[in-house]
Amino acid sequence: MDIGNRPAQPRVGLVLTGGGARAAYQVGVLRAISEMLPTKSPCPFPIICGTSAGAINATVLAANAGNFRRGVRQLMTVWKNFHAHHVYRTDLLGVLHNSGKWLWAGIFGGTGGKMSAVSLFDNSPLAHLLRTRLNYGAIQHYIDDGHLHAFSITCSGYTSGQSVSFYQGRPEIEPWQRARRIGIRMQIGLDHLLASSALPFIFPPVHINREFFGDGSMRQIAPLSPALHLGAERLLVIGVGQQMPLHPERIRTESYPSLAQITGHCLDSIFLDSLEVDIERLQRINRTLSILPLDLREKNNMLLRQVDFRVIEPSEALGQIAVGYVSELPRTIRSLLYTSGALKRTGTNAVSYLLFEKGFCRALIKLGYSDTMKRRDELMQFLGHEACWL
Image (cartoon, rainbow, N blue to C red; front, side, top):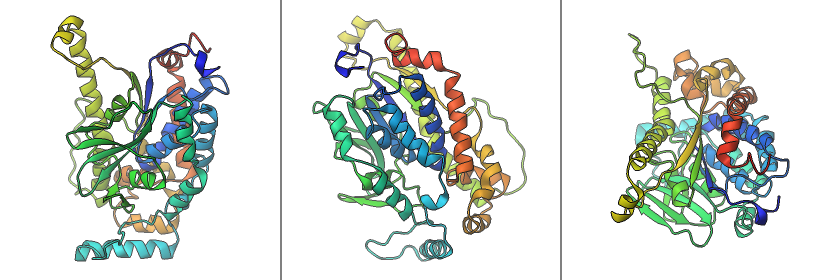
């Protein structure tokens, strides 16, 4: 369909959250949506925002904004055939070198070198993958021709403490600054992706401009904010974890939590908690605005507006799914994780963020596909495609 003749639709923003290997779930969701649309449809999301591993998925979509199914196909090719050695070094020498530096830094307070990177794993294989597989220049091309309104990825500044959303988009989009979060116009490239996906302690931070940046999910108190600042009128959010029930079950335990269990708890707080809080905040704002007359809002210069949104998240606990696939990890990695208790059932939540193996990734893709297809009619109506394209 000619983009110039497409009926006007609300501008939908796609928000892809972080979560390491759990981001395979997003690929299943995107595959389902691509199959709901005609074969050569452009991306149905004129605004694409990604964080951490979600930033990588977002970049692939933005670089293929003219052909949504092609972009999803590229994601499927990688994620269905993932192995840990595509993301971080798993050979004995590489594991010992990095884990040794990490242990040394923990004992003696750092390496002291100005540009020395200390992390548990060496993610140079991921850097090679992102350098050779992505056409970053295509993003601006699709912005210029109107297929894409804006694209952003979020990183966390270790020095400033700010959540920084680097974005490319239409000229009229203004940078923004709020409490602990800012938006900066900049052409996005490899360094931004490596920074946004640099899991704390696990992968090394990346130097961009004046400071080092790490995983964008850290200190991202408003994950939905970048898409709204970029002009989204609706939001589709793809999470990688289940929302916590209002009254979670309290289970009595006497055993002290393992290092892996504590790590998994910390990673969940980084990747899942802020999204839940931001969604709850948006729901509350929408309810408040729905009972305030429009003339009253205009009279009091209330610039807030209601934002329709949908959230797709796993119907099963991904940490529990990981239990069946831990054995796929290379022996060197299993040996390293064993000492932290990560191979016990209580520690697999942490492992699920690092389980870049095709069995686990394919299981998550299948789950994402199934969860999305169950909501086909609802999603097509939400995206505004039911009447004019199907």
